[in-house]
Image (cartoon, rainbow, N blue to C red):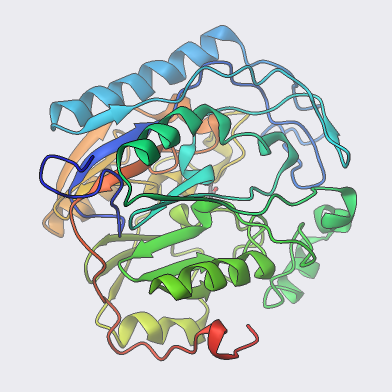
Length: 386
Ligand code: ABU
């Protein structure tokens, strides 16, 4: 069954068209992320202290849920349909033939796992053991959408083994000078042997998809995305931010706000030879202001950077939702003509993200526009080896 206006039930081609239906994460059942080969969580400013394990305290969960619920209310007040993940017991340990992990993580950040690309839902491979089954809290929704509209396709990307050989353990002990020396090599904690990607390493720009090579997305993952998406009419562009030594998820680094405008991270410039794709196609790159919190002021158990400040959610080409204390960003966006809505969200930070991370857009207005008409692009399927 189609949506009332004839749009497919699942339809989202970019990060900014008018939002009609969205999933907002939930902190119910959340656990601390375990130490594993793809992740070394640390207590902020006390790296020698053991990172907690098991379920997060009920009061920490309650505060995050209050903010997630508030976001849901604001979205609903704008006429947007809000859906939520199903309950899931993240305290269950996992054992597969290839790995074991003492507990799982949470369903706060659907963006990391799930992506809508046009009328298709893709479940990412994921890159960390504790997140192997993180698609499960969203499956009831996927089935509902898939059953209700024959135009919807649903793809589960190949699951990697996440065996020890998939990871590069020494990555975690490289000194900063070593990281700087290697900054153009794009070799992180995941090797290139298996297909690996988190959905949050992608930005959607109509028929163009930009994918960051990172700790959570490798070159095999990008190849898989190219081979999957190119026959469906998309162009997939890998991007790199060489000064980000621990890259994971593009939405605190490169944030498209509307056609022609991208918010960028001044600490993480785009690789020089990749800028032309944007500038030659009339995209303006605007640097985000310094976040209000410094890295050392971020919540104790938060593994994300201060740049969660720019992890905003666009609900239309003219309206953006921001964390309520990020006044310099509000001012910049207002000066650029946006209506800025604000919600408190700092209690969500330690669950892995801010407003963009904590959402997964299901339906926006819009279609597969070509927003890079001058892109020079060689499809992988035509013989390129990248
Ligand atoms: N999950 C988004 C975190 C990215 C960052 O810390 O920059």
